[in-house]
Length: 320
Image 1 (cartoon, rainbow, N blue to C red):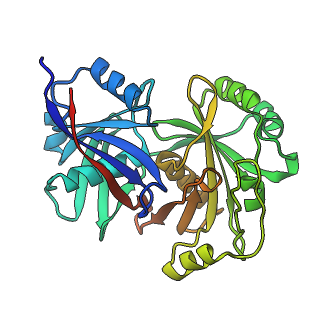
Image 2: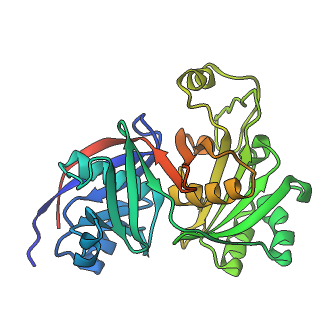
């Protein structure tokens, strides 16, 4: 097949402020592309994820799917991911996509059908079914050294699987989360040993919210509430939880700006175990210069919804 121009967007997800969220490349017409072509292009963008939109399969269309998405990292295809789900839906709608149900968009991906809903311009996806289990004794004992914390600072930990296989750790304070300096080689070995591709940490925010001074990634100071945090309080975006997520990318461990799939499984775990309320706002990316906000809500049926803003930063076409 000869290359042709295809519509393309680059979207910033989990932020309403361009260049402060998690970037996503979206090829809005992936029809006819091979898996190898998709993987090569995703590696070329060098973003954490690149998505390709396609018509739904006949089986999914019969169940109400509006479009199909394939999600690629620079190295492999993912069955599901959160910020690609929100960003792809945002791009699809901006490109003229019209859902069958105005109040509900249905995305097809490898984990199945994922419903999304709209609250003004903000989108939220229904968290996929979660499988979880407690950490083994050996893993629990290895965690403090790998994370660079004291054993007493670890309050709970769970294996979390909602397509991606993650590991979640509940820590004693926001200061502990933001001050982490994990031993990356040990953390990578722990991920390989445990069979998960990413490890996330979280803690509940206590008022007054900490001031994060980012002169560099290592130097952080905590003080009184800043004007910027006061602004978030006025708009209702003050975080209830602070989250960080570390993932193995093949050449070491990196920190992800904002991770939708992890926040989805984290919310299901924390709400079910009474560690978090049924509605909260999580902040992520604070230590790497991002200002991500994830809006969590459990509805009356028990379904957890994971929401966030998205903004288009680049529009154009690609030759593929």
